[in-house]
Length: 138
Image 1 (cartoon, rainbow, N blue to C red):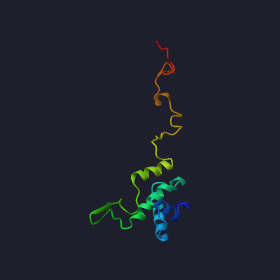
Image 2: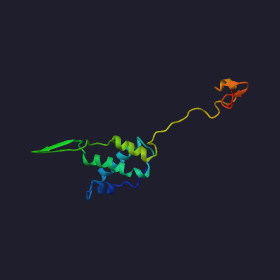
Image 3: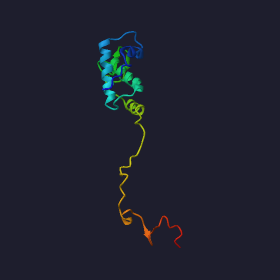
Image 4: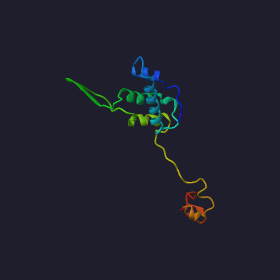
């Protein structure tokens, strides 16, 4: 597991706008958030601080995983609690790690056509000269 010493409970308190947090619980949420992020990208890049803090803050803010509270005529709906990553957070981690874009891979070995006869290389021959090189055949 990648060690991210730059993510501390003080960082989480600042992120949440709180003056102090329960140190043990904040440390646990940061550890769980880091582990959840490492499921998608390991080791975590240094730029993953924001994603780790967002995941930890969501888990810290809703320990009961309640999504809705009602008190009299007032109700508040919150995101689901627990430690999880949204689709956007997963994509952000992959992008930060340099793995977010589309790409293609050619699985053909570099020496795949070496040692083959011309008729096995899918080259059309006429009078011993490849047609691609024989431009003026008329």
